[in-house]
Length: 64
Image (tube, rainbow, N blue to C red; front, side, top):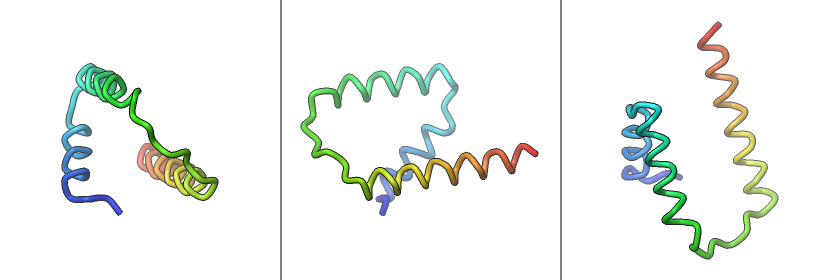
């Protein structure tokens, strides 16, 4: 479940221009490259993939 702060950050991200989004993503990647995250489980990967596909379907439907 997403916290309110994370949702607020994502909403702000959605309002950025493409160049601002790229700048932010690059900065986040620089800051997280050395963090020691545990590997994702197969279940986590499947849930993330489902979420991505559902979002893509919604976007495609909205453009039709």
